[in-house]
Amino acid sequence: MKMSLAEIARAVSAQNDISDYDDVNVTNVSFDSRKLEPGSLFVPLVSQNDGHDYIADAIKHGAKAALWQSDHDNAPSDFPIIKVDNTLSALQFLSQYYLAKINPRVVAVTGSNGKTTTKDMIASILSTQFNVTKTHDNFNNEIGVPITILSMEPNTEMLVIEMGMDRPGQLDLLSHLVEPDIAIITMIGEAHIEFFGTRDKIADAKMEITHGLKEDGVFIYNGDEPLLRQRAKNLPFRMLTFGKNEDNDLYSTNIDSEEDQTSFTASNWDAKFTIPMIGSYNVSNALAALSVGNLYRIHENYMIQALKDFSATNNRTEWIEGNKHEKILSDVYNSNPTAAKLVLKAFANSDTKGIRIAVLGDMLELGDKSKELHESLADSLDPSIIKSVYLIGDEMKYLADKLSNKYEPQSLHYFKTGDLDRLFDQLNSEIYEDDDVLLKASHGIHLEKILNKLTEV
Image 1: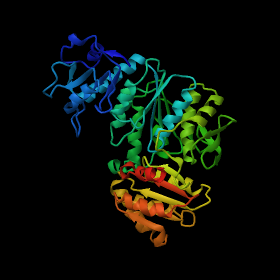
Image 2: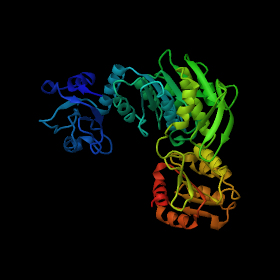
Image 3: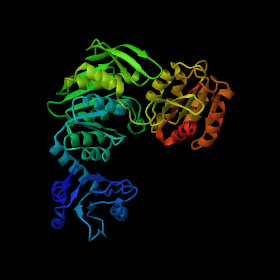
């Protein structure tokens, strides 16, 4: 992006006169003074830490200007400041202005599982024919979505936006912010059930992604989920479904899972598609992406290659070689009961010359249902297939108790939250060449530290 301060001031309804700085241009926007690039507009957000306290650091790192919340004193007098009522709202208004200026087609993706992978697959497919900008990492909330929008190059034709949520109303705000041409729900699981109470309420909140959908927009959703079928009945939009069942508009057939990839055919084409990921659950994500590609008339040959070559965001499910030449199935970014059961199923079906070892950490934000949902993983763990289990986190104690009658004591290891060093020492002493190791937990457990130790040279 490149905008003058005069243009930005108009977009955010500045409260002060910035005519002395009208010709100052900014080339990007940042809310983190530590990661700021020269030429940035610094947006000091007010949360646990107040970004206004870091204005000197932002200037030091090359900020050209900054927004400034009008209820804050001590604004720099010799530096371009745009005063606004609320810096977060101003960031959102500025992103809406820039989105309208660039005017790309917008594809918005949400879901309890698979939204990041689906976003990456869609972007890969669309990139075969269009200039695409997609959500970076997990910038998927009321701060991250505007930052993604403002990162667009002027030639962007397609914007693929991931939208996360942890409370009612959040997707309503984000959907109205971007006004998508296509809205996608990958699935409904138990993620954030602590805040919603039931899957029905999670489904209600996920449906908010349609609130800002353009009148001629398309709603694409997982038709295998009755909660979505029920809620989609009376929507005034064109709708497409995907899934495993044959009553979907696009469904999968002939799924073939291998060690590091999954192949399948789809009902609309005779061709075979291959994704560089394990697990039949990732086929549903691919079907959502193929639905988008089909809408934009992308030839199947391009989509075949795009899915084969697409690059998933870091820390998603991927095989990595450890320093003892063991195979590590890493999925340390996030976890919830649905996702954990799916990856355990895929892990149990992997080919191995050694033994399978599962390392599972707490699944966070499950509220009153935490005990029940952690215990529910026991059905996915068979000692004849997954020989050894390591559990870490206060909530995983429920699963440890549940497994105590299923696994021998020497094969079941439990550690309290934060006891990563002791877990690593025991785990590392058990691993041999050709073993398979699964790492799966919510990010707050920080199993990436175990992954780093297992792979460091």
